[in-house]
Amino acid sequence: METPFTRHAQVQVPLLCGPMYPCSNPELVAAVSEAGGLGIVQPIALTYVHGHDFREGLRFIKQRTSRPIGFNALIEGSNRLYRQRMELWIDIALEEGVRFFLTSLGNPHWVCNIVHAAGGVVYHDVTERKWAQKGIDGGVDGLIAVNARAGGHAGGASAEKLFDALAPLGLPIVSAGGVSTPEEFTRHLRLGYAAVQVGTRFIATPECSASDAYKRAIVDAHEDDIVRTERLTGVPVAVIRNAYIDKLGTDAGWFAKWMLRGRRTKHWMRTWYALNSVRRLKHSLTSTTGSTDYWQAGKSVTGIHAVRPAAQIVAEFARALD
Image 1 (cartoon, rainbow, N blue to C red):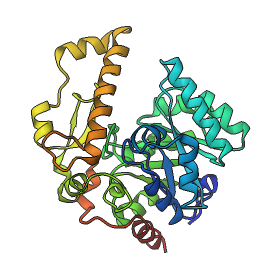
Image 2: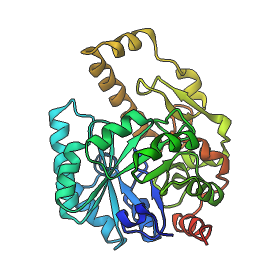
Image 3: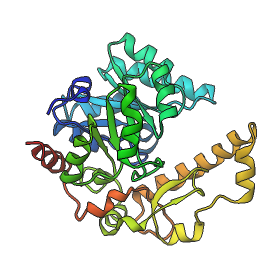
Image 4: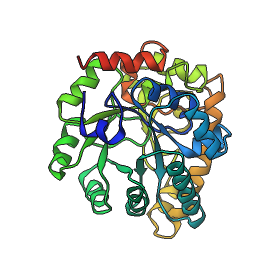
C-alpha cells in the first residue's frame, strides 16, 4: 500500500514503531524497519539507557537492517545545552543517512531548516489543531496525530475527531494511539490516515529489552487498567494501574500545581518531574516486579494477548492490507 507517508519514509508498510523512552532499544528499531515498517530512534534512550555512543548506536542498528530508520527530536527548547546536543544528534543522523525526522514538543522550524537542506522530511507530534498549525508554520511535511487512546502523553480527542480537525490542513497525517491489531490498523487507514504509529504492541516483543514484568503487565492488562496520572511529569501520562500508581495517586499536589502555573517556576518543576521520571522509567525497564515501578502503555493493551516477534506483527498488519 502506497501512501504519502510510505513515499516520504521510503518504506513498504504504512506503519511506524513509535519512539519510546526507555523502550526503543536498537534491536527493536532495526527489527521493525527490516520487516518493512519504520523504526524510530529515540536518542535519549539510545545513549543514556542503552549505553551507545550516538553515532555508533546508529551504525549498530544499520548492521541489522539496510532499510530506512527515523529519528525522534524532542525539541522543547528552554535549555541551551540540550538544544546543542539535539542539533549535534540531528547532524550525525543526517550524516549516517537518516532522512525521516519526527519532532515532539516545541517549535520545529529549526529542525525543518536543517533536515530540508539535506533532502529529508519532518513530521510533528500534535494533539490538537492549534499545535498542528504551529508545526505547519514551522515547515513540517506531515503530522503525527496523538489521540486519547495513546500511551504516555496521550491526546484528548478520538482518532476520528482528530482526523476531522487536521485533515483540512492538507498534510499527510499519521494516527498514533489505540492500535494493536490488524483490524484497528486497517480501520485507521480507512479513516484517511496515511500511516499508523504503534508503540505498546511493540513493547510486548522479544526484540524489546523491557523487562518480562513490563511485558506481562501489557499482556494481562485491559483498557480499563490504563489510567492517567499527573504525578509523574506534571501533565497526564497514560500508564498501567498497579500498586505503585495507586500509592502515587493521579492528581498533582497543590505545590506542584502552583509551581507549574508560574512562568518562571514551571521550568524548575518540570525539570524535577523529568529527572524523577527518567530515574523511575530506567529502573522499570529491567525490574522484575511491579511493586515500585510504573509502566507507560495505551488502551491498545486490550488487543495484546501474547509476546510476539516484531516481524510477525508487521507482516500481519501488511497482510491485512491485501
